[in-house]
Length: 206
Image (cartoon, rainbow, N blue to C red; front, top):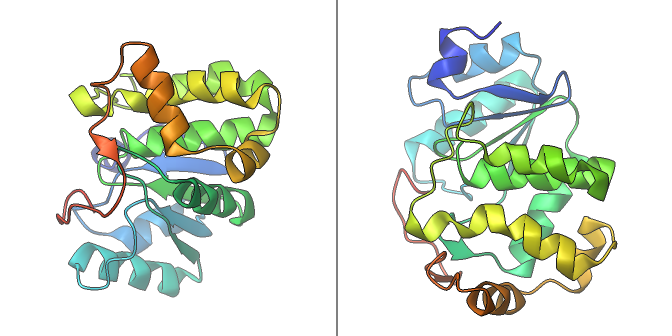
């Protein structure tokens, strides 16, 4: 049964007792909220931001809980570099369970990360479940113009990897240029803003 906090924070168990997803808990009570769910690791997709209050509160909550905190980075509008995806995959596959993955709204970047986790965990047979991570309901994934590449990434990945485990494919063969060409060749050149270079700083985006 989901409570008001789960709704406010867009919290969902993806694999019950093992992996969850959520938004940034802007309303506070971070430590108590995660403690009640037994969270042992936080995978932050917004990057290290020592100067922003949300990052300070988040890392303080993790320290108080004795939870591991991972700083990784994805941009919902810009195609990720190989290193960005490698860092996300390393966090997903090494974080103690149960862990939670979060971005700002828990809608877009978090959908991609959890889709990747399911495929890494269960192989390519998990593709249908991975695609459901991009559902409008209950995850509130309503992509804006340049965020539409996120769900299409899975179609690109299954074609490009050709059966290779997703972590190995990302580490050895993925490039944003290949993803860009794949999108452009299929008439999806407006599904993304650019290839990632540096973040556009904003307390809400990062």
